[in-house]
Length: 86
Image 1 (cartoon, rainbow, N blue to C red):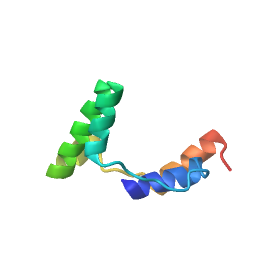
Image 2: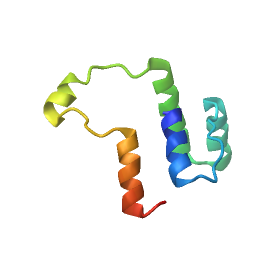
Image 3: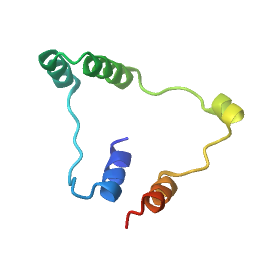
């Protein structure tokens, strides 16, 4: 995900030179200080996913929805064209 975000920023926000992450404990502190319940919930959710990982088998989704056919590079190029980004 980090690499995908870096690639997205390089195309659509080239002024952003570095993509960084916050530790989850810091997100929780920010949520408390700012009284932002949504930030707290998102921080808890991301912390949970970091612990349990992303398991699963895409077979059922691929069967129901079809296998993914668009790569990140293809999506970036189509979005650039649609937005008229050079």
